[in-house]
Amino acid sequence: MTELSREPPADSRKIQAVANALVQFGEDADAQRVAEAVKVQTGIDLDPGEVTAIRAALRERARGPPGPDQPPPENARRRSAEAEGPSPVSG
Image 1 (cartoon, one colour):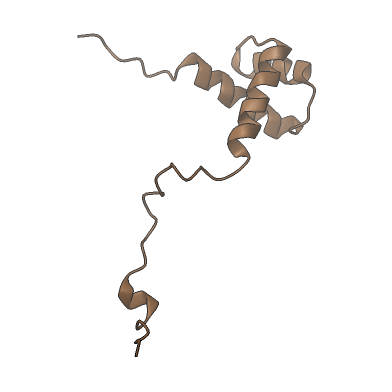
Image 2: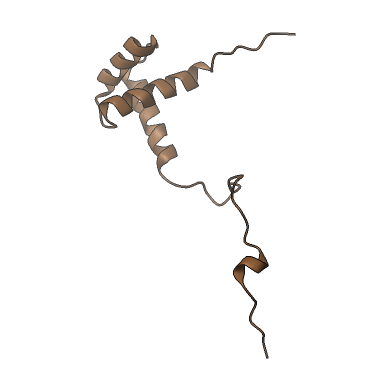
């Protein structure tokens, strides 16, 4: 059996580091400045192109709610018939 690493995958560490730097410097900060901040703060060496790609992916993810093929959140509640009130009687 192999021991599982407790360290997050490299890609998620890069994404989190860029997200943190964007919070610090603003979402439109220069990619070179963000890359330098990531290097100083985390030791992760990124080129400005990677920063630009990660920023674009973060923006895409934040753009809107999930599509209709996504399941509702676990804490979402369905309305019960009692909560909606009496149904209209046809007649």
